[in-house]
Amino acid sequence: MGSNSWPQYDLRRFVERSSHIGKPVIGVSINYRHNVFGFLANHEIGAAGNMGYKDQVLAFRWIKKHIAGFGGDPSNITAAGESAGAISLSTLLCADIGEEGLFERVVLMSGEATLRKSANRRWHQWMCEDQAKYLGLDVKDVEGWNRALSDTEAEHMAQKLPLAQHFSGIVDGDWIKEDITLDTLMDGSRVEHKPKWCEEFVVGDAAHDGIVLKARILDNPQAFALLLKACEMHLSPSETQKLLAAYHLDGKPTKIEEADRLRELVSELRFHLPSLAVYKGWKATSPPKRASQYHFHVPNPVEGQFKSLASHELDVAYLLQNFNDHFDEQNRRIAQEMADHFIEFANGEGWAEEGKIVVFGEDGTVKVDENRYDQIYRDGRGTILEELGAEKLRHLAETWQGVRKEEYGKEAKL
Image (cartoon, rainbow, N blue to C red; front, side):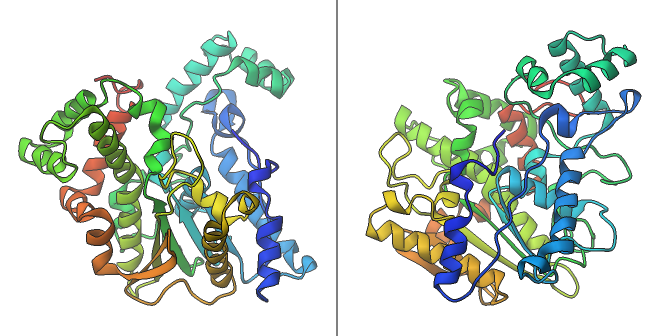
């Protein structure tokens, strides 16, 4: 859901800022198909899957072909995406898009390929069966499907479908050749996610990204009990104790303390730990590829239930300058510094010195030693999560979230 026509995604002020500081960039935003229109995959009805991702490839090809006509350089393209945008860009880095690259630099903001992991054909068959029920179709009626897909107005069809579904790409053996896991992305010897055509890589997260999973996890009054059941499925008793102790969930926290700590945990399981994993994959290539990290710790200044939290997508509000009129002087300065850093990166000035992490925080943009960041900002939790294992904890997090399993064809029930 969503569109680049929404005012919060307007690139005009970001581009104006680049001109103001004497480092102009050309801003291009793209749309792609969602839901059944972009990701339905069923061979029998001629739905190949991955259409939404291929829309993005076509858009980048268009930019490469035509950006010179706007005064741009086709050999100097920087791509940035947040949440679903980051999942998309990360997946494109894994796909077989051919020898001709899509962009030279990339910034993944709060997302990577396993956050909405591409699934096998059997999983997509189950998704197709769900859509048939919503649309009143017989899943085996190929002609009925063809009529529905070709003759039904898109808006009319969308009204029959749930607003949000957990669609994903398909591992078809051709465009996405193999299963994409955090182990794959961490492996510097694998080409997936580290193609030759992409020269620089940046990945990061917001401290409280897990707010985006509020409805799926945090609003459930049994969230902690469900976490414990997920731990029983994926961790040993000693590993469970280690995880709970890291988040001070091993004692008897108050309800408010428990809610805060669960939010911290889901943020770091689903966003922070994967960002560490994919960064290590890029650094492990031989020779090492240029890779950097950032973390967003700016407290939300807006009144409401998320005030003082570095919430999911708040980084976009700061980056694109569209809320500066509503910020006080300090927050406008933070937003401008953040935009300036991205603009300088797009101009080929690099992200950070080797061994440094960029932190966007309440004091502006600072650079922190890589080996000190975790202790200063995360109380050492990142190290503990890495010791427990990124791929193992991905499975735990998906079970806790209730993500449909490829093995069973239904959402995880705890």
